[in-house]
Image (cartoon, rainbow, N blue to C red; front, side):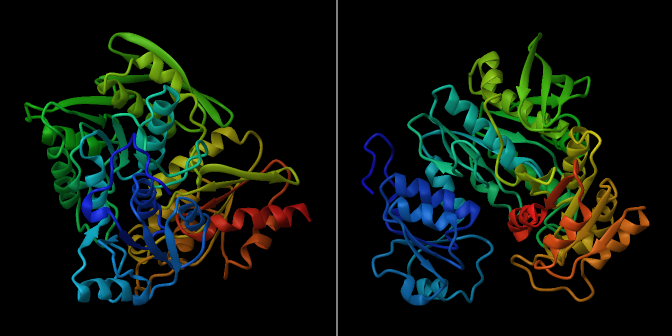
Length: 469
């Protein structure tokens, strides 16, 4: 693919990069931007996917499976995420040949150089808020660059090399990689204990987020939630920095950008805020108060970049969602099937409350797949309590992702906690069995949620297929 002369060229080390795990949400976005900047991108992934096919369309060379021979002789760097293990054959080959190994976050930080970065951080809601900003700024003709941890419904990609001066990026706290960025504007949506393999306590979480705020450029702006105790505590900790403007948002009376009302309309809502002494009302095309809060965070951050708030509010109404964030997968036999990426109890509760508000008289049924053994070990009770918000639920085995099993940690911990909370819950032995179980539970008017960060998302179409029969 020929380089676009109107966009920056790739950094020298990124001229011919090789990405291990190129199909991942974070890795693929960087690879796409580099390809659009003219780099000769290559990489490997465990399996074929729509993402690997999209990368090939941009000119990237993508191998399926991992082998030392996939690393080209002229590779200038190897890009890895924290999920890549030391025994990966391509990583071992790069080390043996002295090829620079670059973490994903360093590659993304390099792409932001010379631009006006806006970084979105927080335990939950990063992908949605980053996506809202990308879509709104694009609809205003500002053509931002962006790198997001999920695919947009519109314009249909997790990354884009724009011609504008703004770069919107999702800033991941899970492995402290967000310490690498130096944003002009940063958003912190919430601060909670998660990623238990990397953080042992809330004190470590606070220290990590404080380090991130210290990276905001002098004279920059921190937009932070006023309704979450963890975020408020962080605000208290950073209040003494003279060269940092702090803007709070939320329903709290002392919020700088105060949410006055969120009126649900089925699977959408209308939000009214008080911004700099005036009221602004705008539509949010996804359900739930938490998504309205995400939109207000986006509004405050965009305004900090100098974009007129009224124009930005209207533009935020053009956002239609992100894949896997309460994404409607279809309807069959009077039953709607919706996909939810929620995997932490706070996210699960928020999505279930949002769906409940838009469900009318129908029941809310959940197929939940726990994500990570470490998270299940620490939060099984809270996950079970969240599932009690559904009318009935079924629970799959744990999706391990990058982790090895922990003795005694199974999804039974969640089903036991759910039953203790009064939930109607049942275990499901396998992915193959799940579509029939959910189709058998559902009746016309119900909403079915496939919920979790793993491959439970693949079961939505299969549930719809069983319902059609």
